[in-house]
Image (cartoon, rainbow over all chains, first blue to last red; front, top):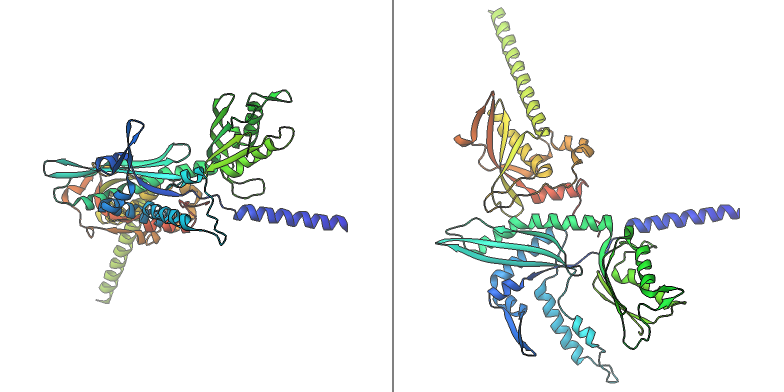
Amino acid sequence: MKLQIMKITLLSLLILGAATLGFSQAKKPTLMVVPSDVWCNTNGYMQTYDDQGTKVKIPDYKRAFQENNDLLAVISKINGMMAERGFPLKNMESVIKTLESERAENAILTSKTGSGVSESPMDKLKKVAKADIIIQLTWDVLKTGPKKSVRFTLQGLDAYTDKEIATAGGTGNPSFSAETAVLLEEAVADKIDNFNVGLQRHFDDLFANGREIIIRIKKFDSWKNDLETEYGGKELNVIIEDWVRANTVKNRFSNSDATESMMLFEQVRIPLYDASGNATDARGFTRGLQKLLTAPPYSIANKLTVKGLGQAVIVLGEK
Amino acid sequence: MKKHTAIWVMLMLLITGFSSAVNAQTNKKANEDTEAWKYELEVAGTGVQGTYLLKVWSYSKKPNVAIEQAKKNAVHGVIFKGFAGDQGILGKPPLTTNSNLEQEKDQWFKEFFADGGKYMKFVSLTSDGAVAAEDRMKVGKQYKIGVLVSVNVALLRKDLEDAGIIKSLSAGF
């Protein structure tokens, strides 16, 4: 009787597990269209500041969105066409506005006892418009005599690995009479399908070979040990590398940089789901390594920070 | 007199039957040509949002069969073959990335591409079947006819995704 109950329980658990795995969805990357630096520079949407004697130019996105009608129309068209494909994009203009209003709210938010909202310098640094995949947009109007044509480029950039995962571009047919806005609309309609093919290829690769992430290991200078310190006859950097090898999909990763105070793992392929069938990302994956290092025999206090779905940093020595 | 009438009726029936058989044979041949990829797609312009504007070159002994088959060839090509670009307009890859899809979903596509099948919903002749003189060529015993068609690719893609024939961009997320 007991054996039968055990069998039934085991079977139910198995079915439940399979169902959870079946319904589980991978974490969806966010996409956002961003005008490229070249476009901002060509159209005069740059800010210049003095960085210790060197003049540095950075794009002024806010002004670009406020002043350029064509930019608004092109982004809106791309967003619309992507939404039709079941992939609505983040709107950069709205993201910038939300960040500004949140900043203002945080500045005046106080508790009944007068405490303000806690915000570290790192929190402030991270408060920028971001997405997992940036769709970088560039166009310029070419003129030959009375004829006009539009050179248009879309680049899909993985925000963590910096790889260009999708691209579509080219120069449209020259026209004597068409408005620039019409030529731009035509360019988006012509390029977006090819761009999406690249995106689909990237997603197919992600499902077949796991999500590609970057892991950095650093140390606080207050920590007296380093990555060459031996634990049970093995250097810490080897222990970390062994853990990464054991937990990646098909053991795929490359340890591109390693010194006594830092390690950089690139092209780390992590599974989309953890052992319990839940969708995971860089943070979930690296938490395993964090746990290993915190537990005896290593007992190394460490701090884990992440950037979106695909980048994690572990700093050893302190919380 | 009655005998003459009977002979005439029989003769007429024979001719009608024979011509239907010939038509059926020509249609069958055209369908075989489609399955054997015997058609050419050429980009003819940038269509309105969600559509492709194409010139389809089809082969048949009868020009009207080639014109009608152009619709089927256009949808077939957009799903399985894709087409090259021309000056200023990008070529487009096929809707499916699975090179064995037509074999794997054989039955589904047979019904989809049957005469008067669902494929008709996604394609229209832009020139109402009128063919320019330079788009009508005699190649051996056959005609090579170029017809301008517009394929509603957004609707076609949605339909194939809903039927589980191709994967949507957001599948798995």
